[in-house]
Length: 441
Ligand code: ASP
Ligand code: MG
View (cartoon, rainbow, N blue to C red):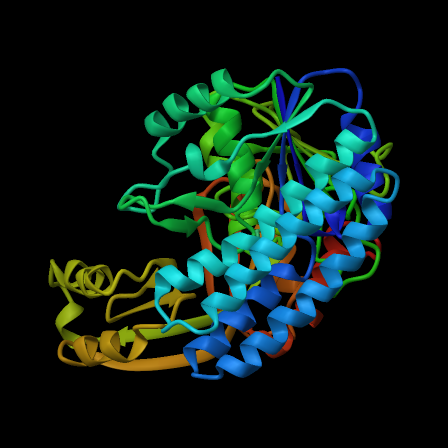
């Protein structure tokens, strides 16, 4: 069986939902994972923020406005079956009553998680009813009955396998099994989620749990591009990526995939295919274990990076210094992305600066510290890139860009450069022009 995930824009309008219907209605049984309609989760985040800041009435106004939008969508979507229309309108009203009730409560993390979960609960209910209206047999598998993360926030795969099987066995037989992306229970059985963009992750977790034949991630772009199309012209979709390459790209900035997406399926070599709902004929990107050509395949950039230089005379000839440094980051649960060392200093980067102040207080006890904010990691990915001749041209291509750090040889598939974010677009464009042979030096 295949698992197909459709993102927010794929379920963002009646026209897109009808495209989704055409894609999934090929006679094969499948699991369909849906995101919330585009914009909904952002809306819910801002409602939760208003509650947190004590603006209950502002939050209530937003809830009512969103409900009005949904009423219209439901009417447009369920326009030939009055009974289904009435059922969905009443379900949707129930969800908005719950949200309105939430605006009167005191803010807690659990309340926010419950609010955020409603987007996927709405979209799946609506699409399930729409498929019924169109004569396609479909049924809902409630994600909160089987999707769970453990105390480390990793998917609890044994629990998921067992519970998904029970949910399946009890579900009415259908061609399409629809479930919510993104949402899950935590180790305490409270509603939680897999972080923003987490529906991709839901799809591969389910893929791993049922040993799916393939996982497809349907978005609004023809696969993973070789550079960031938001900043660079003439980017191209990449037809094939290995799991390692896809993981590096997703982690270092390619917005199309949740960073953890390929983790659950790589071991079982379950292929992941990225496809475009608006252009289903396009090949898209196939991610699997097949060996690919040597060379730089794609470039991605991740913003919001902080670089920390830790300088200490005590590092000279001393062992155990890095251990002390790493322990400080571990205590504050902050992961380090890039790292470079010299005899007297170590530079490293973090993307989560929530605990930066506390980390700095600790680091200052053992070293002199310099902090640079507003940095970007530019990451070049491809099979065995470190051995490819293009690599030796990097400094030549980027001679007028100030490179703050470089990470080479950490893995064969990745070279990372740290630059000031103000230089990002220039860097991405130059690399695009010269590496992908649009221009020669
Ligand atoms: N709806 C969630 C979000 O906007 C999850 C997803 O779309 O993947 O982040
Ligand atoms: Mg997404």
